[in-house]
Image (cartoon, rainbow, N blue to C red; front, top):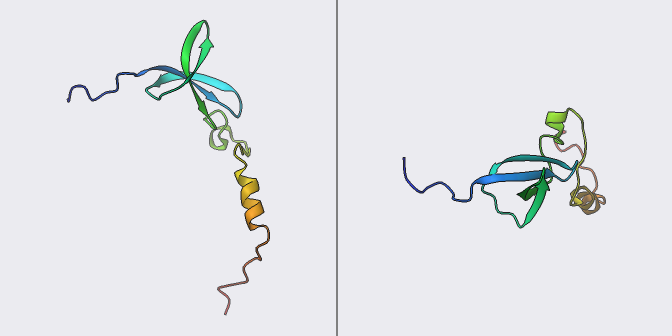
Length: 90
């Protein structure tokens, strides 16, 4: 196995799901400017828009998470379009 190919900053980080405020700890080498204190320990904080605690596949619930307004942007862009007529009809 090659030497010195693994990252040097591999450590325990806190990941926070911003849609439901769930926090979990795991190892990562992702960079972070923020920290969080959990049980008296300080960890680097990585913010997520969605995780297994809020994703519909894992929860079984259909829930729309639209943090960036993408649905509204799409609807405003295409609201004046006419529906396609039956293109495949002969």
